[in-house]
Amino acid sequence: MALLLFVDDDPFTLETLAKAAQVLGHQAILASTGQEALKAVAEQSPDLIFTDMRLPDTDGVALISLLQSQEASAKTPMFVLSASPSEDAIERSQAAGARAYLNKPIRLQTLLDIIREFTSE
Image (cartoon, rainbow, N blue to C red; front, side):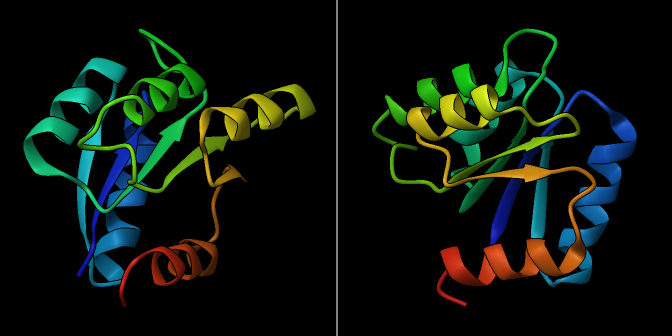
């Protein structure tokens, strides 16, 4: 079972992602801001991190950059979720260390494929 961190300021999106993780047999940690995400990473060491591009206190690229600079999370696979992708945002997220830029709503099968690919399951 993987521990997945979902960071999004939309409660419905967080609830949907948490339910999807549970259906797939995994645990979800939920954060609605970058600060909550940093605290969750420090306290719980998730196996994968999925962050929205737009957060109230930062953006997904800045959050990934910060997490990549910290020893405890530098090797954790991170993914950006966005309802409005752009070439610039995709390039910036990949340059920051995101493994992929995923369009919302994310398909359950896509989520499962990513979990399988980036965890030991």
